[in-house]
Length: 87
Image (cartoon, rainbow, N blue to C red; front, side, top):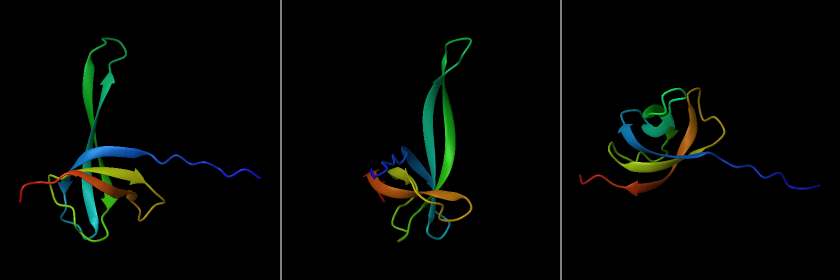
């Protein structure tokens, strides 16, 4: 029996809120080409991610990874930080 390979979705974004306990809100931007006009436009989406030790702060650039649902609205965890804020 072969082992099933699962690819977890990873996204890069900026933390816009750290007011909740063990949760941060991450803003992820992506660019999409308009189907008719061909112009690229920025699409933004906010994801809630689990932060067990409350170590990440607003303004940090982080990588989040998909996981099993932690709660109703949280299906990502913060994997690592790319750039910290200067506080």
